[in-house]
Amino acid sequence: MRGARGACVLPIRVRDADRAAGPSMPFTAHVPPPLSDAMLAAFTRSLGVLSGGGVRAAAILALIRQGGPRIHPPSMPRSEALRRIAETLLADPSRPVQDVCTMHGVGESMLARGFRAETGWTPQRWRARHELSRAAERIVREGSVAAGAARTVYSSPQAFARAFRREWGIAPGHLLGRDAARSGAPVAPRPPASRTDAHAWPTPAATGALPEGGMGKPPGRRAATIDLQCSPYHVVLWVVGGSATLAVDGREMAVAADELACLPAGRDVSLRAGAESSVLPVGWLPGGIDMAGGAIARLGPEAREALIRLSAWTYAGVEPSGIDDPRRALQRALGLAEFAEVPAAVVDATYALLRRLARNPRDHRPVDVLAAEVEIDPAALRRAVEVLTGSPLPVWRTRLRMAWARRMLRDGARPSQVARGLGYADAAGFSRAFTRVHGRPPTAFRAVETSAVPP
View (tube, rainbow, N blue to C red):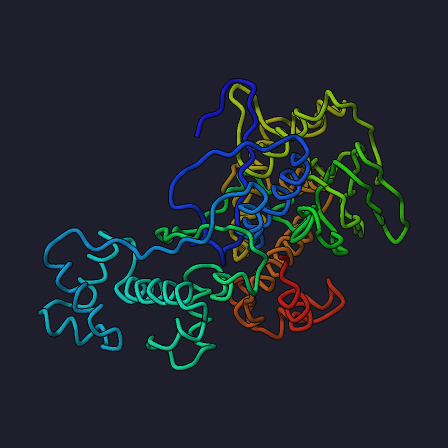
């Protein structure tokens, strides 16, 4: 997608669980001015998809009044040989795929490759989606979820509901207006896509200093908070509407609508916004810059478009052409100078290294190895990291791993899985490190966070 000159594009990403939910064809919809703040709020929440959060597809589609529920089976394979196998799979949904392969004289791995190439799905998922789409037709036709589940291979209504939600991103009762608001969310198949991290810099999105899971939801939303945390970067937030309360080291201060606020680096910060408030992260600044916490500027309406564009640039990778980078743009907007004490070449090399480390929290290599990689003296690298982030490299790495840990726990990963993913020697060592930083063990954190999934 290419925007016209001067345009600003905000990608609103839905939750991973809803990745199959959406329109069957591209569309455009006019967003009237009264909804602009709600769409900004949805964009802010959708930033969490890059770290496992996001918004419901149904909520976005309802906001712009798009369509009614439509569930379609995936397409049949194109080749004649695979089409015959597909018909066999559909004729007896309970028959193991291995038996079908034996009947047609084809290996399982070869069949899987063929189905992926021609339909986008494995044979098992392809057949499941066909069966569930037929069940959806019966649910709508007979007005009963039980009627849809009755003639399927699933062992219980609960197993059927879990499979339905996994494949279509909604509960089967949604088709009858239950278990969800009548949102008019069209649901259509889409080949599964691999997840990528769109952050090009080790920004607060990578280190946990983003409003993960809740800044600004559409009308009727719950209050939004940033949990108590400590970031190696200054994070600049814009209160688009309503108000917010920012706490820095336990001292609370109010931030009003149209004000920019700074969550200062290296200090314990939290933020609470009212249910009807919208808060947008604008960007981040090096922790070595001297910045006070709390409200730092009041904005006029002329700054609105520039701030929205800056936020999209920083956190969603929507880059204007011909400009250097969003960090420098934000520094210029706030009248802050670049560092004179660290050479520009060292700054660029250090940020490149931090970017790579932010994407790979398992990287435990010592500083002398990292310095050799970017051709910087180890002492110069240590100094540059401390000036640019406001923290020594070991502290920055710990905060990075804890941000990844929060993200993975919110996604439902078990502490043992998180420990392996972050390169800890054992789960006990990870649990001690997490508890030391957060004041509670990862099991308690996971239980609270996964039980409070946003609507």
